[in-house]
Length: 406
Figure 1 (tube, helix red, strand yellow):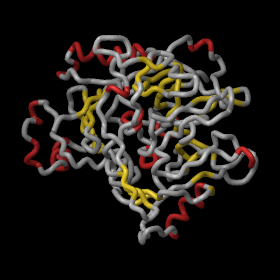
Figure 2 (tube, helix red, strand yellow):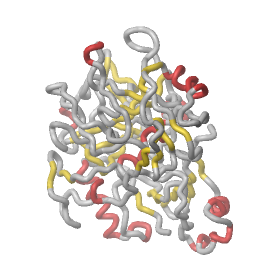
Figure 3 (cartoon, one colour):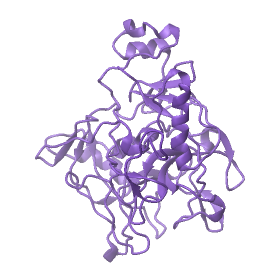
Figure 4 (cartoon, one colour):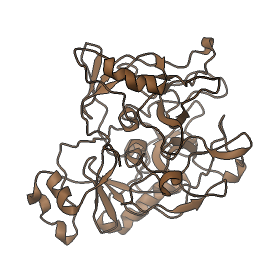
């Protein structure tokens, strides 16, 4: 397992991680360990302020009303950046320092190797970010481009702070071509997980261009907080799993049955009414919370599992290609576009299937983040949708989260 892989720590080691073994008190009776304020993997909020029903923006729903408990109504660490005035930006939530501009376009190999010779603001310890580091910058106050007009929407990154560019249409690119490089290669193929800040997605991109030669990616380097993206998972032995790095507690099992987005939000409220595992503050995770527990060292084709640590149970499915697989999981985050709020974000813990060249294949990888219609009949999309035929399921699985109290 890589040094940046997810970790499950023993009960004793977990308690020692958060300030010494004296913190163990209460653990033996089934309660979860305390979490300090000094989280090594603090999740930046998505910055989604609008609320939506299945198609469009609505006033914030009240508790008990349909669509209550979505992203904009959940807790989070608001994005907070400091422009250092020297070409760098410090993220005050994550502790990461970023290159404010960008380093052109290059292959993934060139981008990774180029960090060694990249000097900025007197620092020489820059690195190409991992997918979890880079995804910390995504903001779902963005809006996807309009497929009908091809016009730009709102970028999924703070353009008041960071340089951003859409694809150069005059140079033969699509407006959507704003794919940014990471060090995270897909364990199941010659692909790299990157973030597209134009359309608000994580996809595994081929390292070779369909036009020939190496695929070219935009590059932004990072430094600081070497522990960012590393989870510290504790099996609480009561049906829950705590992550001491993020301060989040998860249900160990998922919902087992798929459901549409409205039902997924309601599922959390039903569990709260039941006092699920002794808590009444479960929620459907937002996009960045859910992506935090992806294990990019695992995949159906390499480990015969979902892309998640074995501390969690994941319901197996049979996918569109008739293969054993694992599912897509809803988040509480709407994927807004010029068409409104008809889609919501999901994270694929199984293969990111798409229908291309007459067959289903893993076009975007286990660990990709895409979007589905919030409601409807998946049978209306027998060959997926979009340029790469993304599989459309609509009835996705659910894993709940809550914030661990100090």
